[in-house]
Image (cartoon, rainbow, N blue to C red; front, side, top):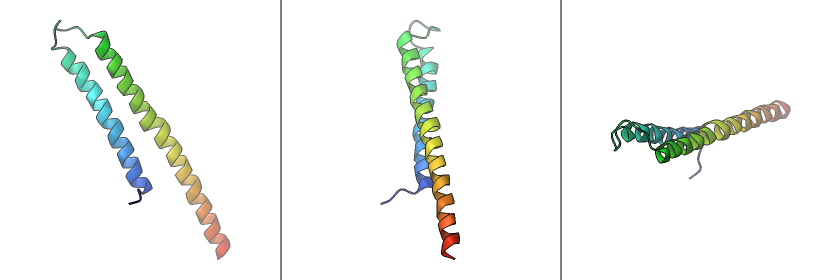
Length: 84
């Protein structure tokens, strides 16, 4: 089964969104853990890692994939024009 470009983008966005949401939930839940109202440094580290993963997947991978896709599409349209 081959992944189309659109499905690949969908899965990239979904994975990064889930990780980002998990990080936000982790920060929110840390307010209710003892000591109440204080965010543990380990929670902040985990949230930072979640944001880093999200940025890498969402930004860099998607941007480079989109540019490659556009270049490929442009090249294919040029080939079709030459074939006619």
